[in-house]
Each structure stands twice: as C-alpha cells, then as structure tokens.
Image (cartoon, rainbow, N blue to C red; front, side, top):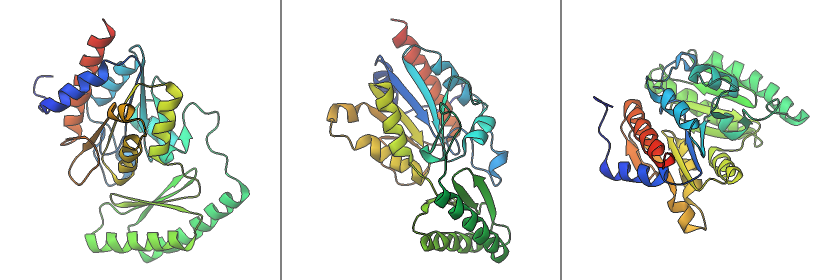
Length: 271
C-alpha cells in the first residue's frame, strides 16, 4: 500500500477487531465511495484498487461482500464491473432489488399507473428546467442536476420534491444533486439489517457518503443488542455531518481502508 493515504490508528484497530470475527458482512455504497461523483451517472467508474480488494475479500472464508446502492441493479453491476452473477451481492434501488432474486421487482397495477403518471409529469418538468436529467429505474425515476448552475439546480430539485409531495404514495429520497421518486422503496438501512440477519453475520462493515447512507448508519447502530451494535463498523466518506463511527477523506482513502481490511481479514482467516 505504498503511497496510499494514511489511515487513523483507531480505524485500523477497529478494522482488525472486525476482521477477527468468524462471519462478517462487508458492504459499501458505490457512487462517492468506490467511484467519484460525476455529472452523467453512466460515466461513473470505480477508482483503481477498490473493486479488486472487495472481490478478494469475497473469496475469503466467512466473508460476504455487498454493494448497496441507489442505482438500479443492471447499471450497478455493469459500472462496478461486479456483474450480476459474480461473487459480490448487489443490492440496488435503495434495497428494493437483490442480485440473488429471480427477476427483480414486481410492481402492482397501482404502482405501474403511478410510474406512468410520474413519467408524464417529469417530461413537463424537463421543459421547465432545461438541463435537468431523469434516470429511469425499475421502481422509480431520479432527477439529476449535477453540472447545472447552483440556482438552477436548486430550483429543479425543489420542483422535483414538490412533484413528489403531490403523490403521497411516492417515496421521495433526496441526495447530492439528486431527488429520487420511487413507487416501491425499502431503504438501505432495512436492507443492510435484513442481509446481516439472513447471513448470521457477527459483525457488519458499511461505508457510504450520502444522505441515504446515513439511514444505513442509523439502522445499524439502532440495535437493542448493545454488543451487536458495537460490532457494526460504519465509515463516512468525505465531508459533512454523519452518524458513522469513522470517516475517510475520499475514494482513494477508501481503497487504502479496503486494502487494510483485506490484509487483516486474510491474517484472521489464516489462523
């Protein structure tokens, strides 16, 4: 790891403690954690080193690795390079899609009708706010404003939130330069806790950078079992307020963290 960002000693110690458990779940967000945020979401690519470290972790005994993202499942697998049938579990659409499932989401008639209405209203919104981009997802749509001047971006985001407020069945999820409007929603926190319980994971690691990841941090910490909550290691990537236990500066520092975790996990599983 020559030339890698130096990690805080307390974080390195916490990684070693985490790695010592028999069954662990290592989960991370994608955008802003493994890949820098970009104007066009389809231009996103992971920085060098992060995905190989996660893949190597997934090969170790008692280690499940998951990408937990707001992205739909198909582009998450494509852009990360993890694929749909690889060693990593992919959790897409904020927990509503799971790569281990058979065919993704099954929307009922009301949800499909709401999605059609949403498309019509977003088409009108694009006319009012040129430069706004809309990403299609199986269960919703995402309004993107990255690259727009600040005042135009804010006006478009406000309009998207107002649109969401008019339809009480929609789940409205704000983020960095985005607003997601979904007809079916689980949430990263619910998805993470459910996956950890399903696996019987003794310890959970999760890294994220955005508002939706804060829900994940909160859900992992909010556990009646204090011992289990203490074994849940959370890391915020970047600036801003956070409920995570630790923080790293950027995607390059995240690679250094994952490489340190891989080293500690290899040492622990070799014993």
